[in-house]
Image 1 (cartoon, rainbow, N blue to C red):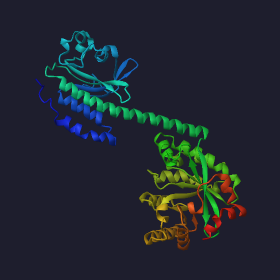
Image 2 (image 1 turned 90 degrees about the horizontal axis):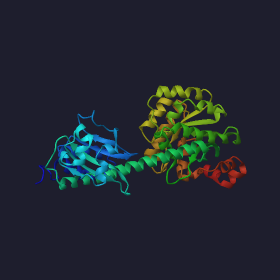
Image 3 (image 1 turned 180 degrees about the vertical axis):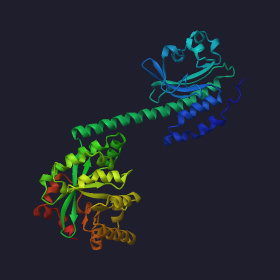
Image 4 (image 1 turned 180 degrees about the horizontal axis):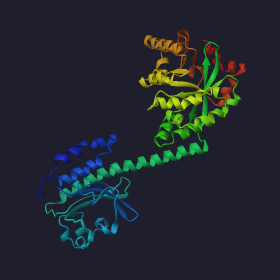
Length: 428
């Protein structure tokens, strides 16, 4: 005879219907599964365990009111619990009454908990590895438990295995990512490339933006590297390593040519940039704060920027026009340079709205003492339109892709400039 309510219904049915959420990263699946199983079978405890060095570690637990008895993170020796006996066939996976199983009845844990009814099935990961157990138990015997109930346990154990496998892979990838980031910091496994910034009146490059390239591109973009470093708490260290490598180019550049380096608010707030900047000519450094960077406290950021700007470092707000936060950066930080995002420069020759917004930013710059640099210029027509509007400086693929330092240095000689043909492009 089936136990009451043993069909697929209620919370079990709802959870099974929502298993497609697994593919979308539903990290709450296992706790919800444990709760659904425990309440459906009217048990006291449900848990997922992992076998670690001869112990069973309770990774996730649903046992309301019994936290003193069992909670996530607790562990017991495998010899003290049912798991090993079940896996080796000495105890069945479904035990309606533990007192009727001689091995279970003789184990101290049975009377100590106490355990009346018990169901437990192994969690096997997709690669065949045994992870632990999916288990529920009650202090009371339950003679209605049957093979159909056990089959339902196996379904949810398989779902838990899927989720656990994904979490383990994510953790493994995170460890690999952190190791690569640390290696980049310690061994400079990245490279720095330089994109020319042009004066549109003089038709010559007047600066270089320093950009980073990592060894596994294009599989993982530089933005992904910096985002992962920030998530791992290594963002400032990686940025400083890059800036330290980038500014070694400064003594090789002609007087008056600046280097633009990127730094997040977190790195600026750390205060370590001052020591680094003091090793070079600060007035030849432009510090770019990206529009996408979140600033939680502008007064603190301004305070951290003050010793840099007082030494001559110029401040630029990157990606202006790409979103609301860029306007906040401009208003609060009062930068020396406003870098017009490529979303505005792209097709500006064809779009009246883009031209109107650029004109407004130019007027704003004149009122506040800021100057515009257009990013992402890709065509002669875009460049001509920007110049006509009054934009003084620009960069982009049309004016030169990011390049190694030795190539960039040739742009500052007449012969190199003529050979590249970029001077003619800048002249329109």
